[in-house]
Structures are given as structure tokens and as C-alpha cells.
Amino acid sequence: MKTENPVLLIELDDEIRNQQLNEVEKWFEHVLTAQMAFEVVIQKIIPKIQEPHIKEAIEKIEGATKEHQKIAKQLFQLINRNPDIVMDRILGTTVSKLEEGLLTFQDLMAGAVGSWQGMHQLLLLNQQAMGAFAVAEQLGLSLGIKEIVKATFKVVHEKTMHQLLIQEYMLEMAPISILYKQNV
Image 1 (cartoon, rainbow, N blue to C red):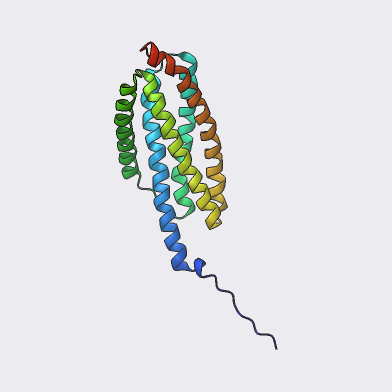
Image 2: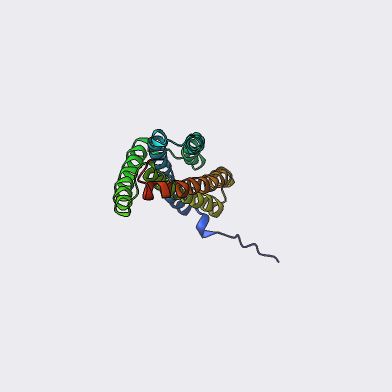
């Protein structure tokens, strides 16, 4: 006689799954906050950039930023939750201001001036947002939610390309900012 023993995966019961989704929701709030902080800074830096080719490239990145924020908001729907948009906007603005103050002090102490400072901040905030989306992708893989993986993979790829561009422009602007004390 054959006895059937049902297999019970403890990690997947309703209570544990709900706890996991609560943690993912917290991370998605971080993703949205990081993306909003990046958006605040990119909107501030564009008018300060004088070099037309760099300005055009950063404007294109800004266009993608709006789509990335939309995707960050949609992540919540994939786990049947809602983002706290007001709090995320406040935190995003606060984070960008805090980092701006710290980096401005650091850049001034090092002798950098002008729009290079904004590019430096943009580089760091893009890295932070890119990492937040990448972790969200890993959470999607861990939970077996392929829609999260699909949405975040695209953003991580685009942000990686943006990171390389921002870094290149920041490095191009650095000598002019530091040696000649000019805005670029």
C-alpha cells in the first residue's frame, strides 16, 4: 500500500508570503524614493549645463527618468499594494537636498565649481537608483514574480547605460571645473 505524504513548503504559507511581500513593499518605497531623488536633481542640473551636446544627452536621460518613475510605481501593483507617493516625494526631495549639501561641501573643498557639481551628484544618485532597481529585480526572482523581473531588468539596463554616459560627461567636465574654475 502506497501512502501519500503531502509536501508542505513552510516558506510559502500565506503568513510568510504576506510578510515577504511587506518587506518587498518597503523596498519598493526605497526604489521610488531613489528614483524621485534622481529626478529632482536631473531637473535642477539641466538648465545649468552650458555645453549643448552634454545638455542634450542629459535631457534624453531625463525623458527616460519619467518612464523609470512610472515603472517604480507600477511595481506596487504587481504585489497588490499602493505606493505612498506623498511620502516618497518628500523623502526623494529631502535625500537629494542632503546629498547636494554634502557633495557641494566636498566639491568646494576639492576646488570644483559650476555644473560639474550637479553632474557628480547625478552620477551618485543614478547609481543609487540603479542599485535599488537591481535589488527589486532580485526580489522578483526570489519570489518567482516574473513581472517584477521583466520590468526592473529593462530599467537596470537603461540606467547602466546612463551611468556610463553621466560618468563620461562628468569626467569631461572635471578639468574645466577644477583647473579653470569655469562652468561647463
